[in-house]
Length: 200
Image 1: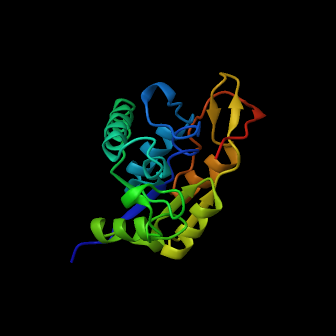
Image 2: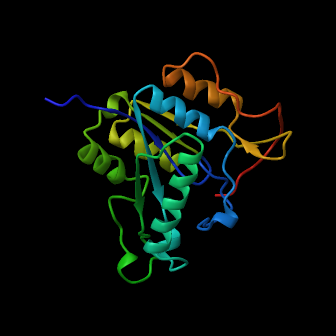
């Protein structure tokens, strides 16, 4: 019998990249400082790294599913360049109120519903009780709880560091690192500076 695998689930906007609102092109992408290091650590510790993301921009007609898939292939390439990996991407293209055409649906995949996480569990043979969900919103927390994810971490607002980039709060980096079974906190950047209140 195949052993169940652990996963590090990541929301996308606000966790992997700064949420500038419907980010869908390389030009508008600002990666959160420290995310590549955390994903490398997760892989070393035996976790699959899985993106779980609501994409209401598809539902509203701002961009197509193909646009999104091509963008995520680009993002996965950037992770590879940094020695990290995104093992799978699950997305919800629906919206219960503002969706256009076939995307106007009250579905079971849009967070806070747990559908995307449960689909990943089925597809990838995951042990959700030993997995981790990192998000930045109440809907992320509720989706993880509904699916039975063992550790759920909601990030504090991103910090602007001395390089001018945005980074995960060091306290959150520590929580994630310890949850992954790590001991030394990965380097994020220089000292954190002023609080940055992300969009979304």
